[in-house]
Length: 68
Image (cartoon, rainbow, N blue to C red; front, side, top):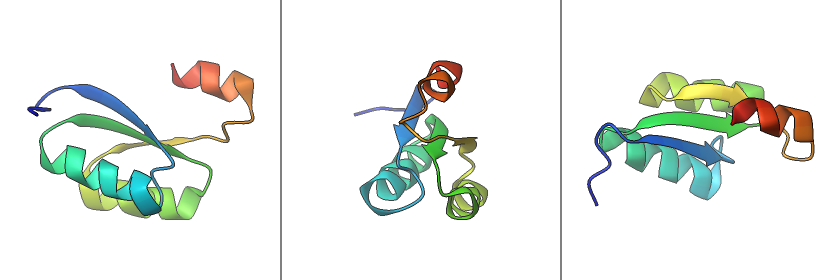
C-alpha cells in the first residue's frame, strides 16, 4: 500500500504495535500524527521518526475532539 503523503493518526504510538505502525508509516512517507499519553516515550518516537506528537488520553473526550 502506498502511504506517501497520506495524513494518518496513530493512537498508542509510544510503544508496542502503535510505535511499530508509526515507524512503518513514517518510513513509507506518510505524514503521521502520533498520539499517546506517555509523553516522554512519545517524544522519543517522534524525534526518531519525524512524526508529529500529540499528547492524548483517549478517556478525555475533549482531547480526542481536539485531535480531530
